[in-house]
Length: 252
DNA sequence: CGCTTTTGACCAGCGC
DNA sequence: GCGCTGGTCAAAAGCG
Image (tube, rainbow, N blue to C red; front, side, top):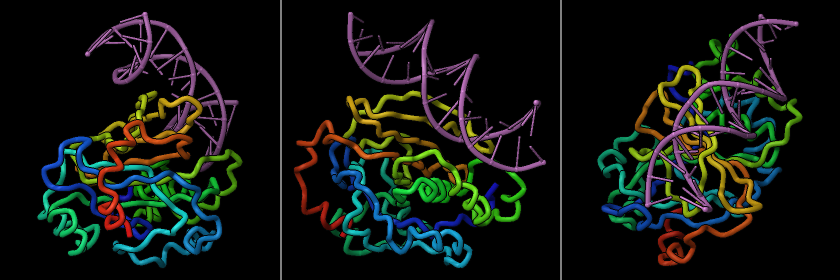
C-alpha cells in the first residue's frame, strides 16, 4: 500500500552526520527522550483528523523546547552532500551544512505524543502506513493512515509509551545512538521486502524499545522508531560530551 | 560462560 | 468465530 506519494507532512527533515566519520565518532545529537507535550498544537486530535489538508512538504522547523530526542550518532554509511541536496524529503540548510562540514545524512523525524493513539498514528504515518491492510487504505493510499483508522486507533485502551520515528538515509540498519540494545524479535511485515527488527534497551529497569526497518518505497531509507523514555544515560555518554556546540547548531 | 541473535510459536487487536 | 497481522516470548544457536 501507499505506493503513491509518501505523506511526509509530519516529519521534520534534519541532517545528521559529518563527512568521513566512523561509527561512534561523529556526535550529532545527545538528549534524553522526554515526554512530548500533550497540548501541543500538532498533537491535538484535530491534527490527525485534518491531516488530509496538511501539505505534503518537508522542511526544517524547531522542535518544542520540552521535546528532546534520543541520542543519535553519525555512522560511516553517510550519504553524500549531493544526495542530501537532491533528496526530495527536504531542502538543505546552508548553515547546517557548513557547521557539519558540507556533507551529511538526511533523516526525518516524527514526533510522538504521550497519548497512545497519537503515537500510533504518527509512527504509522512516518512509516507511510505500512501497518495493517484493509479497504480503507486503498482509499487513502496517499495518506497511509486514514482519519477513519486513526479514530479507531484512538479507541484502543492499550497504553503505549511516547514514540519518535526517524527516517534515515543509510546503508546501516542500526543507528549508534549511544545506548545498548538487545534484539528480541524480527518480523517480516506485509508488503515489505525487508524485515522489521525489534530491540530493547539492555539497561535494567529501562523499558525503552526501538524498531528498525527499511522503507518499502526506498530501501536506502531506514526507519527507526523509539518507544519510551530512557531512565539512564547513554552507555558511552563521555564520548558524547565532546562537541556540545555542534549539538546546538544541529537542532536549534 | 555470559551475552546476543535467531526464529518459530504464541498472543492480542482488528476486520469481516 | 475466524483469519490476518503486528508485537512479543523464549529456547536454541552463535559468538567472543
